[in-house]
Image 1 (tube, rainbow, N blue to C red):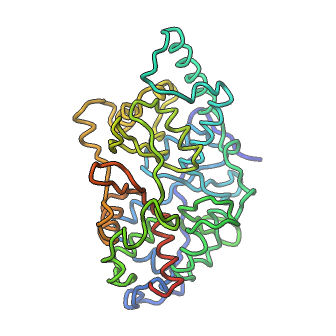
Image 2 (spheres, rainbow, N blue to C red; image 1 turned 135 degrees about the vertical axis):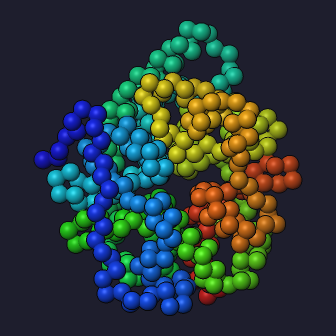
Length: 381
């Protein structure tokens, strides 16, 4: 029988790590680093800082959505393994995008009209109060829901969970079989994989960011020629569907909840925020829901930029907005430069802009994983 929560106490714990280095060579750093290096070598090569950043924090199936949002915000992470309360078996990984979908589902059930429109559209005071009250009610219900009501673990049991044996496989195999979207996986992106032992207990968590950090620290993994190619030469623009994609965008005047609805509809984890001239002014991400308190759910009716600033700093102002720049590149920047930005800023997407600062493409970590897998298949990596 699953253990229930007592009051508002969070059943969150740091997962005990089983020594994954048993049997590994004593001096694995002496080996030449490449995409044929093992996943164990990748994890062992993490810097002390990255080891702290990637410390595994887990949730239990009986935790609430509120617990999940608070835990992700407190530890500044985008996902967490979900364990069964009675035996600690890892059932899967919950992330901000799954939580966003649940929020949107609840709001849609309450009143579909609340998800649409611009915050600048004129509305009667009574209508605004009614929408605010409706959202507050949705927030109360959503935050009380348990993760067992959010996550369809078992429907796609192979998504996000793998055997600890993966530690002995190559980084190339990890990227190809787990981090590149395939039709047989329902088109879902996998950003991180929980590695479990024979009893289903969590041993390690490996992510796309781990792979990217490894490649950035060991550029010999990629040919110098590849790193020096521009994004245009690598076809990382909107015209090529293998890498990069036409960015989904919303106007800065759009209500935050409508922006999240667009994100959920397009099945992406972030959308560009543009002004009336189409210039990039911000980025709305599913991760911006982290730390949202149930009593503040009504702020989803605010314009997108105001919502982002409130979530990140709590003090909306022009100075705060200037301190939250959107990271961009141009088509003439190189792959090497892109990797520097992604790893140096610990971000998961970078927008490609034109001379007018209008977004023409967005490149995510998954796009980089596809590029690595595609070039590797051609023998170019």
